Picture 1 (cartoon, rainbow, N blue to C red):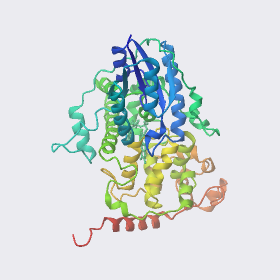
Picture 2 (picture 1 turned 180 degrees about the vertical axis):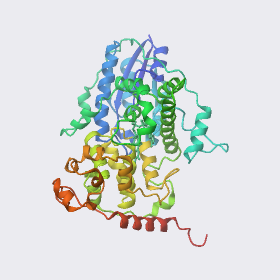
Picture 3 (picture 1 turned 60 degrees about the vertical axis):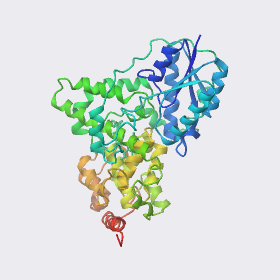
Picture 4 (picture 1 turned 90 degrees about the vertical axis):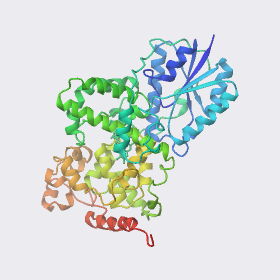
Length: 481
Ligand SMILES: Cc1cc2nc3c(=O)[nH]c(=O)nc-3n(C[C@H](O)[C@H](O)[C@H](O)COP(=O)(O)OP(=O)(O)OC[C@H]3O[C@@H](n4cnc5c(N)ncnc54)[C@H](O)[C@@H]3O)c2cc1C
């Protein structure tokens, strides 16, 4: 009887799981294991919101596995020790896993693969977390891309999205091995701050499948409404993709299927969603080729930029108390639900790095701890994009005006009212910039700036001018060149 270990990591699913399918094909007995080893994520172990998600996603996976007649074992790292112990306990000769592409994980996996191979264990790694391996997309000179559009064109041209593998209907019984209880991992918060997350999300593969099945209904409105934070127009697939509860390949094939004979609005939605999925690919490509970018700007000129160190300003931003309604609404949505609409992420990121001139890394860290979809590749690329120091980044002079953005993308203030109850009775024309409203209009609805809602922590026009000057100096050609 042959035994294989399937090592679950960022692939908490049974469908379209190449490692699981390969192990099923080659062995009669399977040991299914999740090894908790946050240290192996280097400087970026999962934050609080990610741990909350992980707990529930593991519970869902465990239940799905049990329904199919097997069992998910839970162990603590180091991963190599845990896998070696399982090899000893079960006589397994094969370990199968799906790749994770973050720098620390890639390095750890390489060392682990070598060590197990030296023990005489066969180790097989599979793709699935991305549409294409990050090293497989290259320009004519064989180099990686730093600009999105040619990257996306090249990836599309070579893209093979294989038919997804069905989830196994049954699993062979697992050898009885000791397992920790999920609670022993202490992923849940000790102090309950997570009611908002609980109300907003259902982690796990089944919920991801439901979202996939609803794309045909959702996507006709996507192109027109995806930038409007008050609407639930985007897919909210990001945490499911991060934890590998669904593969991008499945989504891509579903989009191709929906495209056949689609009406123009659906077709436009499909195209835009494909573009977003390719941004995710681009982010992973850039992180793979520039593994230091979570901590260092890709554009070296920014290494010397003097960011402002102000705990007071940073804390006002984190708590949603800047006095700029669209920024505060976004930060409170994030705190309450573990999510923020993409348009608002760009606005709060621009405000932090340009108007407040606070280091993008402080913003990235806060997002890391609070987002349920916190993802090293996506978070890094987007923060560097917003700050203007990354791949294909926004130029330094693109400083979002948060008031104009708010008026444009939330004209009636519906999003602002949802997250800022203290302003909810203000008229739409005043709600985007209450400091400009006549005193009588504020008083009529009980708003007292500086008391019931903060005054702006910076004067927007002046902060913008100062940021432009600081960034322009950085961009000036160096003397003598
Ligand atoms: C400052 C900042 C930080 C961000 N941090 C993260 C992060 O940690 N994790 C994360 O998944 N996304 C991040 N994003 C990207 C984006 O905001 C989210 O992916 C998106 O809001 C998720 O919502 P959705 O699934 O409904 O998106 P949809 O619009 O439905 O898009 C579908 C999928 O495409 C991918 N995608 C969409 N936009 C982007 C993008 N700009 N870059 C990369 N992939 C994208 C995501 O996987 C998303 O689930 C960040 C954006 C900004 C501006």
